Length: 449
Ligand SMILES: Cc1cc2nc3c(=O)[nH]c(=O)nc-3n(C[C@H](O)[C@H](O)[C@H](O)COP(=O)(O)OP(=O)(O)OC[C@H]3O[C@@H](n4cnc5c(N)ncnc54)[C@H](O)[C@@H]3O)c2cc1C
Image (cartoon, rainbow, N blue to C red; front, side):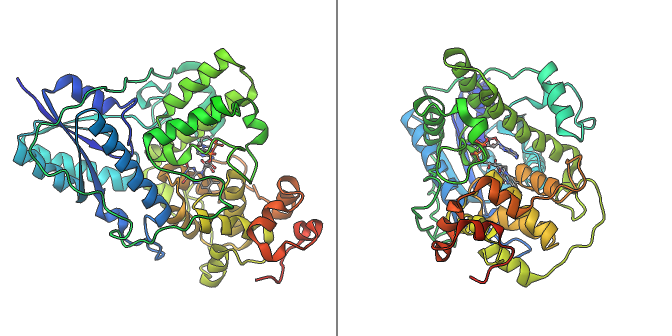
């Protein structure tokens, strides 16, 4: 029997390694492709910040535009809608005689709520869903343990996975796509239409991030092959300035423009053709952290958002709004912290070293509720990923997966190690450019604010 299917794109804005799309193409006579901007993602967070800030919204818009272009180049069409996916998809299914809806599942409650509402609406219409898991390097079903038995210490998880699981091969990129319905394609919204302003370019930014699958693949190619940087990744990954100290793949991974299995495949090719060393392994190691936080989110559900975290560890948090706002705008008086926070506000990106430090400073030095910091990151980070963000914040706040109870990043010591000439500090706090580096690094509380 002819089957009409709809593929619902979510955080999987790519054509390569897309299991839901591959299955729909194999099982259907006609397919419709859809991306839906969920209006609930463009409201305000409890702390008042826009839920999706301007950097991430811009990257998302670009990613959807590029996906549409890639689909059109193959003879198809990507429908774009704004609203509630569970209603929009059900309406389309009813109107167009769709019999199956294909999509990738997500790991956290807001997204799972939409999935379950969609299932219900489609069920009432007699339309089935075909659901897949496609966001991690190791497939959820290939883990050598159940989600309930997932170890609470990363190393235990990693060792078991490395020993007993295998990364699945990639799904092929389709070369032809057909569009069957005479239905309006729909406009991709603008930033202005979403109530957001255009981010201003900043020459000090680590790089210009442009959303889209081909841009993600290009960055992967550039980092690994053209610039040949993979072989030194482990030595450079704690850097602070410029495009090349780390892969910068995170925004494309977060939006699914890049599949982690694609990154893995390129690393394996590089290891076979050029060199295999600690650095080439370490990029995969970091992708395992990404997987881990996703599986932790499945295991602990909404506890990753709770003030006592997944450990359920009671702690009194301060709600000093003024201290928090000084942290947000980079005016705490601690130069290394402020430089990082200014970079984030100006560009939507911050290094991993920076993130660890500013998060530690907020929760351990200022004792401010970690959820405020996590929400600010949710709003501003161009690579925001719910599992990686809340998982890392839990970890730094000492209420997550860190086996050490008392981990603390001393910003003076960290600046001495990672910014010994205060180049990074001076880059982001130009009013300090004539200051002596040693004095800047050793400062506790400066009066430049
Ligand atoms: C408080 C805090 C919040 C964070 N929030 C996010 C977030 O919202 N989104 C996000 O992608 N990362 C987050 N991270 C993790 C990490 O900082 C970024 O993934 C990394 O800085 C992105 O730069 P890169 O792509 O050059 O990383 P690379 O060093 O090149 O690493 C390659 C990839 O591995 C993954 N990865 C690396 N480190 C981590 C980590 N600690 N946890 C999970 N995945 C990791 C990322 O997908 C990254 O793109 C957070 C870290 C902290 C401490």
